[in-house]
Image 1 (cartoon, one colour):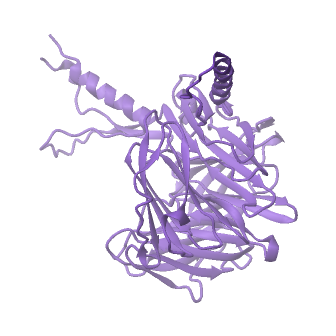
Image 2: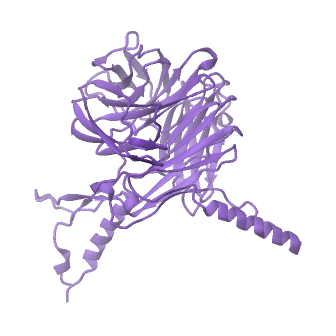
Image 3: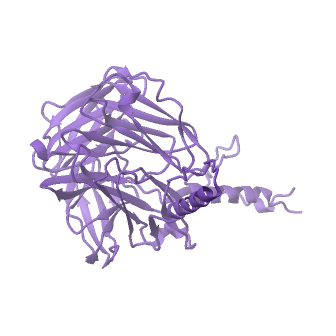
Amino acid sequence: MKSTSALSLIAGAVALAAVTGFAALNEPSGDSTAEARTATRLPVERTSLLCPAPGLSDLSETAYTAFTPSGASGGSATAGTAELLSSAKDDEANADDKSDDKSDEKDKDKKSKKDKADKPVVSLKEPGKPATGEASGADSPALIGTATGRLAPGWTAQQTTTIEAGDGRGLLGISCTAPDTDFWFPAASTAKSREDYVHLTNPDDTAAVADIELYGPDGSLKSDVGEGITVPAGSGVRVLISTLTSKAADDVTVHVTTRTGRVGAAVRAADDKTGSDWLTASAEPAGTVVLPGIPADATSVRLVAFAPGDDDADLGLKLLGKTGAVTPAGHEELHVKSHMTAGTDLKDITRGEAGSLMLVPSEKGEATPVVAALRVVRGKGDKQEVAYIPATAPVGARATVADNRSKGSVLSLTAPGAAATVKVTASAGSGGGKPVSKTYKIAAGTTTAVTPPVPTGLKGTYALTVETQSGGPVHAARTLTETVNGIQMFTVQTMPDDRGTVEVPAARQDLSVLDD
């Protein structure tokens, strides 16, 4: 009799990898032969995204755009779904009703709220064409999204909020994030002029428990208040970080981890003079990091870095511009002490030419992992506006950013090592239009900033997809600008690999023929 139990185990692991993006099968112990099993890249079949609650202002207007690239890597033949749903909970579900009349009224209210919560804010129907939705006001909830089947690989969603006036004014953009258990946010602050919130969103059916640690220029900002924060199932919470410590610091690194469960995390940073925007997590700690997409007309750029390990980091700074890499005069190096946040004002470092910043070890062979982010200001006086650029991973095979308009988008492409070639595709518009593609060559050590292609006959908004064709790694960012009340409000979204496929090891032998 033949046994298929071992084969079923392997098949189950492959299916799990395709769904979750996790792929790991252990080799039999002691096996070190050169006949290594090969791996196959498969499209993911399920993807989660979380969009933080957008508003602290009644004046806010928020646009949502969801998109999945089309093409051969578009994944499963299963049709699938892709929806962004409100995380709002029925806050009267446990009320003790004492009157039949009141009970009937509350039952109707509960049903109305549930129907509203269950109705998708955005529902994507097909790859290659964006879907949109909107919300307004300070009470707009966080959104929880799931894509399955052929809509899962490369699924992305953009949340763009416009606040015309007030301390939180600005164009606040964020690519909705995947849930995780560990996040680093350099460039936050507990200064009196700042009001920074950590937003945590839990996509799962059980509560998550998170810890928030703060690190200033002198080290850890001790606080018991940031420990054991419960994030209820299917909902979000926000925490004002200045309430976690009595210490006011201009440069603070926020570290979010979970004890149980997983969350989406982002920091909403607001400043009295420069407005507000989202700060997303830095790429994982690394010895060399790239921060792409500094606008040509930046009037102030501040670098904030943090070394989470036990060793100090000595970093060399390189500005990658149109023609090559230069070391900024007066800012050749940055010393980052272990577990201490370091910041330096780079002023108008780009001097009229768009660029990207690369941090490298000052001494070869002494690469200490760091996380980093930039605080970028455009404009002067009462017309200043702020955005944040975290260190980001390369585009890899493919990366996408949604919510581009007919005007106001700039795409920055950076090749920190070898020269590279990428293909940029402008999707169909959400209301109509035909896709357009263009190829760009990026010289080694340079940044190419371009007005991206626009779909033919565009109606609505569209997505930009960057695919690496050849050469070294490319880092990318999109700047979106909108002029409101004479202020050039802007936001920058980095574009790491969309992880639309996962590497799945093949079995080393045909287990279907094994005997019991």
